[in-house]
Image (cartoon, rainbow, N blue to C red; front, side):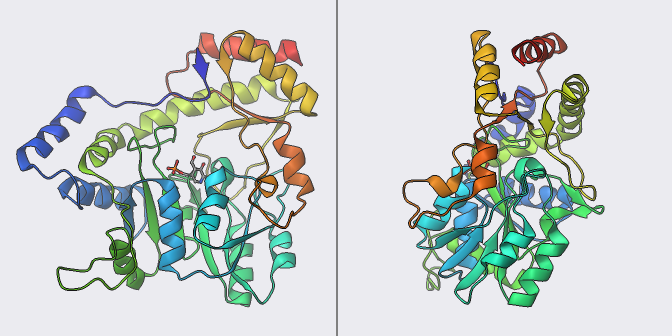
Length: 357
Ligand SMILES: Cc1ncc(COP(=O)(O)O)c(C=O)c1O
């Protein structure tokens, strides 16, 4: 069976060395030494100042909204994983969708502008499949309208914009370190907080709002990463260059073989590519289903990332029409991409797709 992704596991002995440290200290959670070490190493690796590790990418978004005191209406993209929208709704916020650019698949800045009202408090764009948003234009809109800006950067690990980490844009960027992601800690996530003065608040929020034994200044939750998860991240971090190279090779082979036959996501020219996904856009739903069925027949399982368009979720009231996102979501497939995918397996995937087209 070939799935859309396969979790990369680092060398077992290397992981065990970190686990031995946990056994020796007996410290398994509550911001232990490995979480602190991973925060420091990731900050250096990614080129960011303040990083707070958390239990997953969904709570990273929720903590970001609460750190910035986001209220009422939030403009976001309809084309993303469900957590981008559900995290808003579960925090009592109201998503207002702004449709995407059909080529980049990212939220269209012009549509953001058109959606702003006096009740808008924040914008939550997504760097979809790691493709950098139009960050300078979005920043301008945010400044002109005095809004907060949170990037859901779940897919954008190590993406650079004009040579600097794209995670440094916005008030906060959030990452997911789920096992399916480019870099993972089994389950996990992070907040990149650009205003240093908010870091302490975020740290209280992920630990029940507690400052110390005498003081609980915030209404918090439990969103902490544990030491075993941090150990996985530390063991994996050294392998990221190799993981990137292997994914790059898979990415290039798809691009070469399928050029002219299917549509690709248009990449931001000023941003680097992290090779985390390989989406193809088919002509219509029928063609997408034909390709999907043909691949499934050989036990190959691409994913319909992202479907359905989030504006159509049952709990979104009143209904909002997003024609571009709805159209794309019906005819997009993410193809298998991971370091261990062999040339032989990939050749099979490509030939099945070509045949089905
Ligand atoms: C765009 C996006 N946002 C948020 C999340 C949620 O992250 P997690 O699964 O770590 O909670 C995901 C996860 O796949 C995602 O793709």
